[in-house]
Image (cartoon, rainbow, N blue to C red):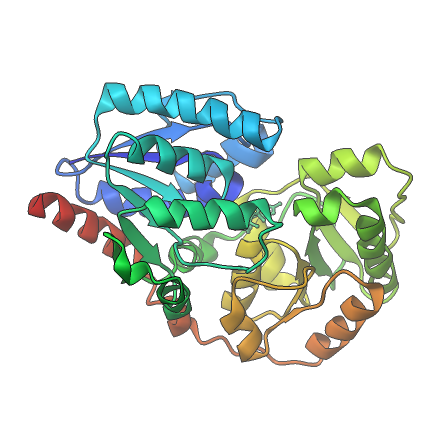
Length: 360
Ligand code: UDP
């Protein structure tokens, strides 16, 4: 069975690391061909993950990035289409909710190639998020919907997905697989860090493109940083916007670092008092590693984390963030990993793909 896997952005490298490893255990029955769109491209947003996590070198690598959504998705669609016409795979695997996800799914579906969506069924119910649009459209044209949680299945059922010709499976979360595999290898970043710190990341378009919002987030981090320093691995988008804005960071309160590798990211989460983030993946990793998470958004797709008390969607006001920070500083988080499966989501996905192929 030939599988083309489309990746392009940081969280997809991490998810693909887990799934590629599982697919490889079925070689030569499954042959995986990786396509990297180039959405994230530099050393610390791309290459480092391939090195640290042993992801196979992509057979196809484009250089499509730093473009508006339409241009980026359109170019990806055209290039992926060419690959699929050449390779004629039995299935295409896509992850999550980026433009690379949607382009991969659309290119495959238009050629009647079955699409497997890993991390299907997530919803923020906020259609202003580009990620939400990508998720909904990708789910709708996918053949296999690999859901990380039961909640994701419930979301699809609310949208009447059982009427469609697709298969919905709860597999567990491949990000849990990755944390269980790579957690023991977590390493500190090569920077001097205080003994105690909190970890923050900011990169969502709604938080970076509106300077008033970004200023509020930085104001909140400055206030928190007065009592416990904030380590902020800075996403390139956020760095660019900050450096062309009048927003100033106080370096005695916010320790700005370049984006770190996955092993360093896991180390930072594990050693932080807690996490403040607008990232989807980091919210779960915080939970897996027993840390509270102040989510710097009004809503989250990972609502089971909110129900567990480990995550508070604090919005973007200074007051909201400080209140959530205070609540979670006093909380003890005892994770129930079973909400996200048993750490074998990737094996389940590989086995189902193979099963589907045998059925055809
Ligand atoms: N991450 C990383 N280095 C960093 C920041 C994050 O390796 O400097 C990892 C993090 O541990 C998580 C993933 O990147 O596994 C999250 O990706 P991101 O926040 O870019 O995307 P999202 O999860 O919001 O889609």
